[in-house]
Length: 276
Image (tube, rainbow, N blue to C red):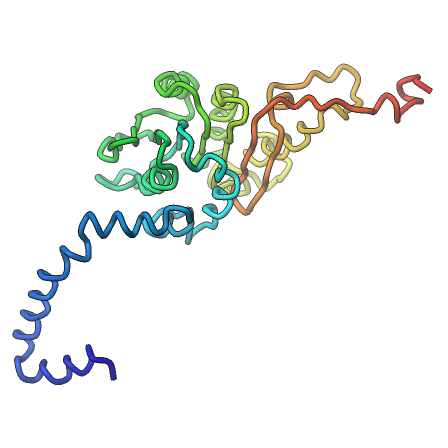
């Protein structure tokens, strides 16, 4: 039997239920502030500052638990760990509940000690604002609203779409913000499962061009646009600037750069191109 159990078994019958509750209340008054002190909190955060999964659990964001995103983010964003850069997350969480949301913004702040963290939501979440965290009210289905936020931030290094999860909004957001992301930047789309759900403006047709996953799968083809043999094909902006696409369960991570490695198709396909 543990010491705690022994004390409970011995003392509780003597002092009675009211006395036992009073002792427990007194104990919390003594130990609570000490265990939850700012200094203790800083030590806990410092101990887990290099593990994004632990930080996600600590701040109670669904990027770990409900989902398994944190491990992938750590792999793709670790190189920015101590850099000064701008991260924008669309969707702050908490829905319409007063005082709720901002868990992932706090997680990003503590994982990236020199970064500036920005959040955007259709609702006012300014209660989240603090040193190195700034929030904006904006509508991700409105290109002008998105561009206005981007203008206020300046250079965009990381963009995370954790907003409405509706395919039309995801498509508009990518079309508007991806060109504003710097070369070498990272763009992520979360909760892509809604692409398959008609109830969330997705589709049973996995090839439906109006869904988020169809757009994202097309980016993978676009990485290889220089190998297309279509007569007169004109590469899109994404074709020329997406250098890698990583697919995970309900998460897609896109790397931006200059996609112009060249091709040897005219040498190999001699008959088609008359080079033989």
